[in-house]
Image (tube, rainbow, N blue to C red; front, side, top):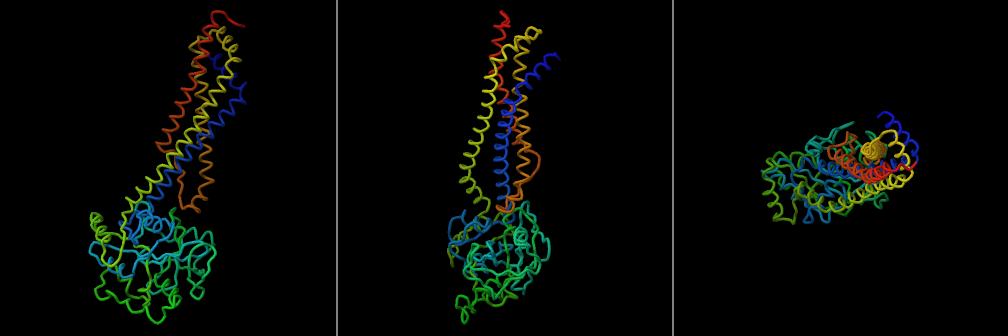
Length: 434
């Protein structure tokens, strides 16, 4: 038996160049398949974890997916805005625990500036309902109009620290036409990296946005009058909203509201109430359901990707089959020698299957090694450009399953040349062709 193994190994080494290429092609195809799968699951995970603590998202009447995308993922913009008084009224509903206002439409060097209220930092949750953590500094105070809190990525890319000044531009994009330079914002807080789109945000008080746009649209003399709405019966969620603001907040039109409910079971009835809101045409979105819709749209793309990478792996394995089959004729003599040493046809059969198995397993190992190399290199890029955080954890059960499936396929493919050589060595056994 030992001689047999030595001879088999020798045979492998003799053909190291062609087998090495086969091994490489299987390794690359496995890396591609696992990489696409890892990206797919991490992107889902990242998306699903971004709005973990929000029960309802409210936008002007429109498509739920679009509202979800611009309010949570910073993709696209609202078509219409929401009146400030709507925020006040929804915040006073008994069913709502908290309401976070979001005002979008301004930017700073390509990053979004979002006007919001201080309680954004108390209630916004990511992943498993974890709060946002400050790396340095703190949130803006109630009377601080021109404070800003920036995401980790903004701080890193623009090299900002506490005290840096930010000049906000109206509109988005790197080139801004109108800069509000008479009202710079000062960085008071920098958030820890979250691996979510929050890393790319600049958060400022609503008052700051109001003050900055104020007089900018020629509203200096009027537009002051309706901010006292609901002041007397303001209950808890509104303390930060209506006190300590400069009297301009009423002018801010909001892009979206994030709502947390006292009781999540009320989500459907509150959603219906908001969708039929008398003062304004609104759409309330259940984040979970809107995400499902998004996945069903993206599912087609995902499956296509999976199909393509699956084919790549199969092509790699067929490469191995070709290599093994083309070498059969030269190996016929080798097998005859093995027979003369006393090997049985069944032993020769298992030798060839084993060979295919070794190549496939080695290919899988190479694929995994390349995958982790790729992940380590791609992690910072994906984190900074897409806000997707890639875990470098061990392969998931699903990934192990795929590896197992590929190994089985390799084994199956190895049986084809092994069977041929088995038949040949049976025939050769009768009349040795030396």
